[in-house]
Structure formats: C-alpha cells, structure tokens
Amino acid sequence: WNCLEVGAGAGSVAQWLSIHVGPTGKVVATDIDPRFLRRLSVPNLEIRQHDILKDDLETGWYDLVYCRGVLMHLSEPEKGLKRMADAVRPGGWLLIEEFDYGSSLSTDVTSPSAVLLTSTLRALYDFHRKRGIVDPYFGRRVRGLVEQLGFVDLGQEGWTRMNRGGEPMARFGAATLQAAAKPMIAAGLITQEQHDSVQRLLLDPAFYYPGLTMFAAWGRRPAN
Image (tube, rainbow, N blue to C red; front, side, top):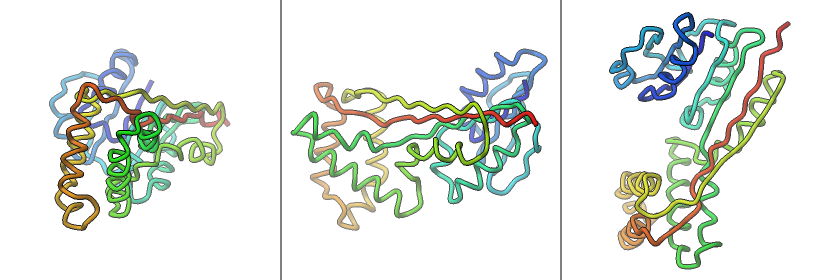
C-alpha cells in the first residue's frame, strides 16, 4: 500500500505503517514542522514539510490517508479533510481520529469535590476555542464529516478512560492548564488559587476523573 499520514508529529504511527506496508509499500508522513520526523531513518518512509490547507497532494493516489488530532487545530477543517479525501484512490480508505474533551466535564458527577476542576476545564476549553487555538469538542464531528464525503463502508467508534492524578494524561492536562494560566488569570477567567487547586488535583494519585474521548471515523472511496 501507499499510505499518507497528515500531521505525523513524532512519527510513531508513520513508523508502524512503514512496517506493515512492507518493503514494496511506501508511507508519506507530513507535518508543518517535520523536525521530529527527520530523526527517523526508515527506507520506505518519505518525510515532507507540508501544510494541508495550502500545499498540493497527489490526487487519487493513496490506499490509506490518516490523521490524528489534526483537524481540530485547523482554521478550515472541512477544507483540510476534503484535500485528504481527494488524495484517496478509488477503493482506498480514509481514517480520521480527533479528540473531544467534553467527557472530562462530567467530573463533578462522579466526584462532588471536583466541581472546581470542571469549571476550570470549561474555562480552559472556552479560552482555546474562542481564540482559535484548537476546538476541544471537534471529535464529536468526525462521523458527520466523513458521512458527507460520499464514501462507502463507513464506520465510527470512540474510546475514553478514567484518569488518575499523576498519570501521563493527567500531567498533560496540568501542563496544558499551566501554559494558558497567565493570560487566563490576566483576563479574569480563573484565579491563581483556582489554578493551583486544580493542579494539585491533577497530580493527586487519589483523584480519579473521566478523560477526553478519542473519536474515529472511516470510509472507503467508491471504486467507480
């Protein structure tokens, strides 16, 4: 197979694909900043610096086009998806996976002591969304977006998990909040005390909360 991963990041999926397509297959991994990809040395992996909203792709060429956590960051996600879909050959597959942070806002349902966490996360997600940094609720859109492409053999699924304070995903959440804390506090969206309290919760091994949901949707371009 010829495979394309858009927004390949550090290349973990691209490497996996390179193994599975074998020596006669090829994987193209793109990113607007390919510095981490360039560390890889895989014979059947091509690395490209590429902006899915601006730069050309082969049309009707790839057996599989894939992205994860990319569309939610784009100013024009429908345009980006259409360009990916156009790169799929007749009979080939498109698979997209996007995050949705809405599930983490149910924290206070299962843990009344975590109402502060829920309100802080909501403020953080609204901050990101209104400033066009990322759409934290994009994942719930992937099924509808793929269904509009006219592809066949459609499928979709989602997964989430319970996070525990101090685990990797909780530390990721703490780092994300920390990165936005200064402008959010300056804008009066949260207080320093609120930020510090939530940071303690996210690093507390005794604290459990529902994490983000990863939604996936896929389909096959009709063969004729």
